Image (cartoon, rainbow, N blue to C red; front, side):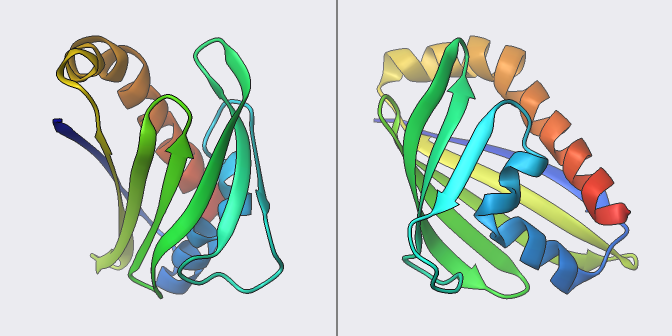
Length: 149
């Protein structure tokens, strides 16, 4: 099955640790990601690899779509990753990197998922250009507003 990889970047005038701490707290993602989204930690343990969350969000016309989330990388303050297990798409991997550049922080979000060729075609030529890319850019614009304030 093909692996689809999509990335978005943004340069933000903020502190490296502040950016990492905010993005690595999955319960704060609804504040900037857009759409209707709720994320709750399964336990009260600190953020670390293998920590789990449950989320309910909006995908197209589906409301309260359930996903389980699990932290896969936690290298403060430079790299954070998690996998979302989606009922239709399977595992969707999200990786955020944080790099100091020009006295600002460059945040890159990369998403990867494995899908069958038919879905890959539809996602590449329809879903991502019309919905996915604009929503990722809007989310990062919201993130910038939250972190630059």
